Amino acid sequence: RIEDLRAALAAGAEPVVFEGVDVGTPPGGWTPELLLELCGSKRVAVHACPTTALAWVGGKNFRLEFMGADELVRRAWSAPTPRDGGRAEHLYLRSVGEKMRTQPADLRASFPRLAAAVRLPDPWGRGAFFSSALRVSTAGLELWTHNDAMENLLVHLAGVK
Image (cartoon, rainbow, N blue to C red; front, side):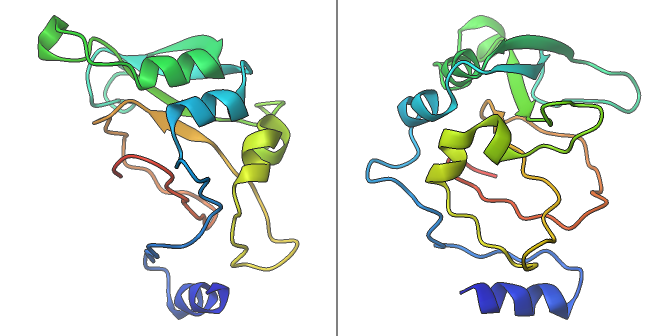
């Protein structure tokens, strides 16, 4: 219930986890095929890294690769390759605004079909929206620790976080 989420957020700055919340899960679940359909071939900037640990501090170990969202989904869900004992590349997308330097990420603008399929709770009330980003990664990827300036809500659709 949204009231429970608001109460938990008001209680303090600690992370809150809600499981089993209906975010519009389609009948077949959030499959790669459905993401391919909903995200289309929109061009995205993807972090590509040879290891599972994406690093920024102490030396960047990834490169930015531009590809269609459909290609990202295919590559992220493809079977691991035998090279290096598993996957040869690790991919991570954090979508950005349409004008990446001046606009925050907005799922509704960047991926309208996906945004329409997801029912996002609004724990802060109308007018408090800042951004909504699509994140997609290969299994096992580790991201650098960071602090967000704004409160945020993670809706986890598939895989393990």
